[in-house]
Length: 330
Image (cartoon, rainbow, N blue to C red; front, side, top):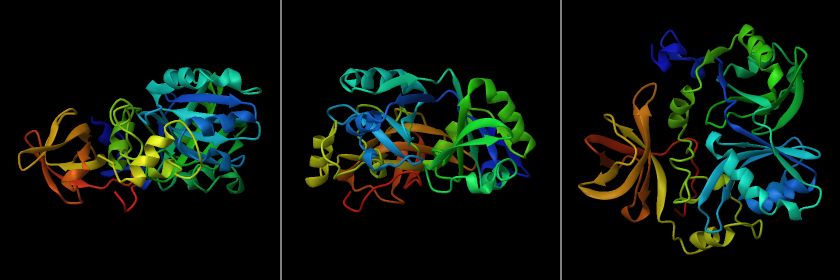
């Protein structure tokens, strides 16, 4: 049985019709303790994190001094601490990168609490209705990346609005000893359990860039379609000068596109237009309805919605993906 069949009801993906429980415990969960910690993260990444109030969160991108991508992360601000959700394979890299200058920040401490905690994604249009069976509706956050501490049938849980994808749902995490109890509670309430590998299918359908594929030091956040995670007016931060010059002088060399493919293709394959190389495929796979790919296309070739391309032996068409954001100047 395929991943899609395993989480479908009457031929329809549960993530589009019901509520799907996805184990995201492998994702990094770093915890910054101390009120100066949020300011430090603000200076080390692209988002205006200083604007966050306790109970709010935002996507941000950690970059190199030349604005190459280290990781796309979500920061959840608290009263005296904050949580940083990282890509699974980037938690150690961020711990190392953030740890270099942290000793100079008095009152801030960073710990990797991934192994001591669990993480779940609750995805689909019925996710809020499901949560209302097990927690008061007044406690459920409704704005993207808002979060709070709740108890679900006596189980302490961090609950955040948003899935890290372009579909409704929630992110939940807590201490590892409560994982099994919470999973059983949510399944009894009506969620359908999905294998962790389904994330790859869902993120392709959303167009979310992934670490080691679209998120590498070869690309910057503006090229990767992460404009909403970048503040262009918050002042100095790591990589800021490079990004500002790209915007001011319109020197964005390539942008990330979705590609609807008529057959199988493999990451690393050149994207061609009438026989001429215009980009590179970075991800590809079979989703609920079709083969989809993600790839960077050079802006000098004027990529646009509906542009016909070839990827290996597979014809394809460029398409904008819902997770990605670009301004009109690109």
